[in-house]
Length: 90
Image 1 (cartoon, rainbow, N blue to C red):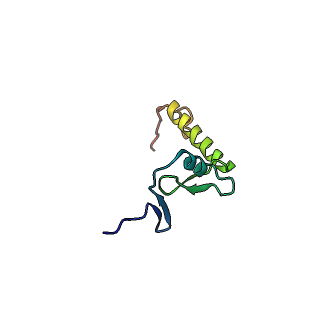
Image 2: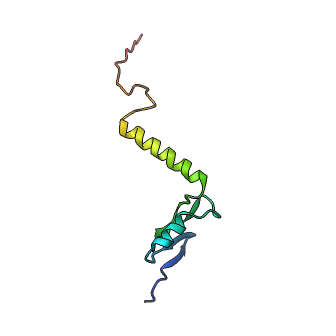
Image 3: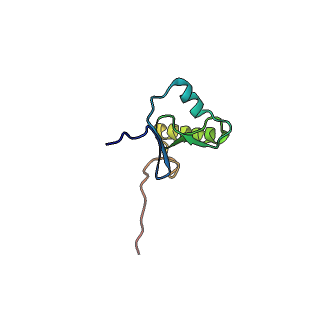
């Protein structure tokens, strides 16, 4: 059986299983000339490009959602409490 290449694409999704170096990690996450998504330095798929301002917005929204979840707040109901409801049936 032939050895599989450590980098490439399968069904249009990139993969890279070469041992990552620190320099390759930094250059993968900071690519000013690229878009919001860049190839992962190790593994399968894409990751955020921290040189793009849109990535920082995504991270801020994810952080705010995480903080809201930790606090236990529920924006849909307002107070988050289960108040009794009176039902009148004619």
